[in-house]
Image (cartoon, rainbow, N blue to C red):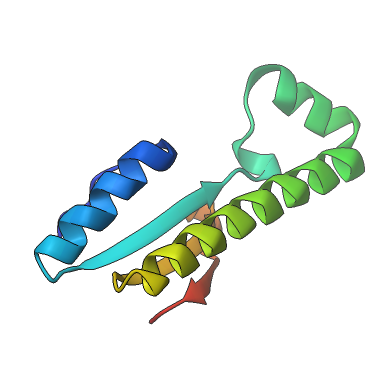
Length: 101
């Protein structure tokens, strides 16, 4: 399985068309930051205000999940075989399947 990072709607639309043309499956994955993966100013803020930072990171993850769900539902309606996952940083080992296997 080839993995190709794609950012933005235009890239995802192109990937969906290629997937459909080749009868392949499109796997949409977003990686959400965690408190442990922040760097620079964000890391400093996370150390001094961990509760607020966790809340902000949960909001980011929710936005990623909503975005992927919308794109996956759109592609499914167009006949594209698609799955979507929103993951926390790989060190965390957690992920959630949104659609598909």
